[in-house]
Length: 100
Image (cartoon, rainbow, N blue to C red; front, top):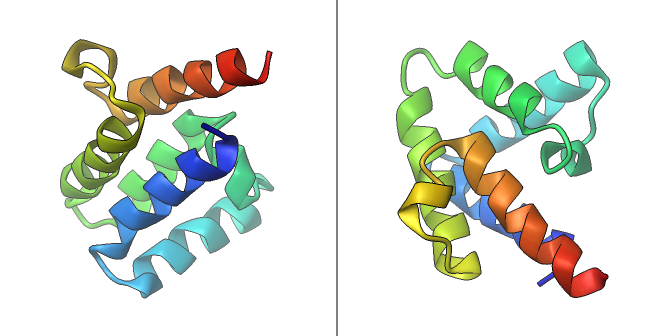
């Protein structure tokens, strides 16, 4: 697996809620935090914070959708991927191990 695969999981998880949401999240990360799309996997805390800030209370649904996509592709056990940050970190470890 590559970082690209992880980013695709994240995008697919958000696409369930429309492309506008995905674009808004990435735009807000860039404007407020100076983080590009690729920074999602190195700094998932900012990503999670951005989702929470713009989602009007539906952040849990968005995060669950993203986690589900990551679990499916990276075959992560539930205990390693209960939170969005945890799922991204666990998947990233697989990416790093493959590339090492």
